[in-house]
Length: 317
Image: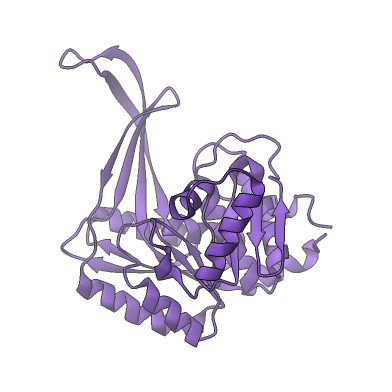
């Protein structure tokens, strides 16, 4: 059992530097009553719109929601979407450093939703250019002294092109590095402290497994091959598994009911990073992350776990 009396102050002093791909999630809500005369598709009458911070920005707001200090470093376009993201970060009390690339558009995911169903998702995205990425990498090195833990949130949009250099710089500064990975080339994450793939992401890298023993062997082989201290596997309704050199720890899901797993991975790595920055062990951090994820998946849509919601969980005394 963890002591809830100390965690508030420990989280308040903990500083996490979040680096990665940010995006603006736009939701257009409405209703549909007819089929278009122009094509066999529904016509949605939009009644309200909503903007939410996505990608690494959502990870940062998860940290802030738990009372921690979140510093966000990313690249955006120089457009209205970037201004909206900056405003959202200010509202969530995240210290954001958004490097503007005039030649690209900020990544946007636009979802049209009617009767609680997604009709279509439209993506707008460009990869940032070399010059702006160099500026961001230089700023990353400067920010290392201002943080306790580094969190790299990779969504495959190009913001972590120089991830190998970032890991090396963080290691030189003795800062733990947690990575939410993407794609099949995990060698570029070599030397990090921990990666947090989900089952589908792990399968893409190590191949399928037949049983629990096979899964554990493949996960441990990957951890050793990448010289990681730990590998945290998020297993949806099966909870979390932490692979370390001499042991494997497992926590079943803390959720009583699961409504929506979107954004749960962001909550897991955010609460893991914040807990480690606050001085908790990896096992304690996993308990906290599992409890926070249990809160989030019981909500509809991308959500965060507040400190009050976390402290209400049974892992605290």
